[in-house]
Length: 232
Image (tube, rainbow, N blue to C red; front, side, top):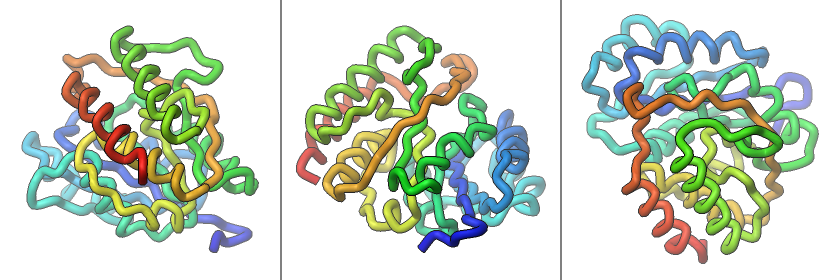
């Protein structure tokens, strides 16, 4: 049950080869205007020095740093992080700098107010889209396709900022290891009859040269996952 006075927010940060941004994002998360935070970083077998930075510099600043022995992908890292979460609400934070932790209050407020059980931060709701045009079109297509089966009315199914009551996310058996997590979790939430809401958020997309990892194959996998998990 959510504590009445001081709810705790667990921030799960899946991390793979983010040595240039991991310090900054952890600092931003710690500075986010939420008093009670549990920060969990899951290192997905990084090979660029991220693991060493986490152990030497980040571990003393957060609740947990967990290292995968084998690379599993974003979905696998999130599965690990959720299993260790103790907060009343759980939110996902990518390790790059595309999403601003200052907006946590906006994303979790509907849950705290009892309006919903899950809240997605939409990059497209009342916002001018940013980033590669092809990525925008792909995201909107995948969201519409997902909505056909979930009967949700989302504008941004692929968003990073997803916040859940902990009991909700811990009740989901996550199978997907990579970016297929996004359509999978959305499909499975639709079978649980949870209340879901969207709020607008800002977005500062990075380029492929800056390390953006999602690609064409992930888009194809997302289509497959929308179909695969349409029945739960």
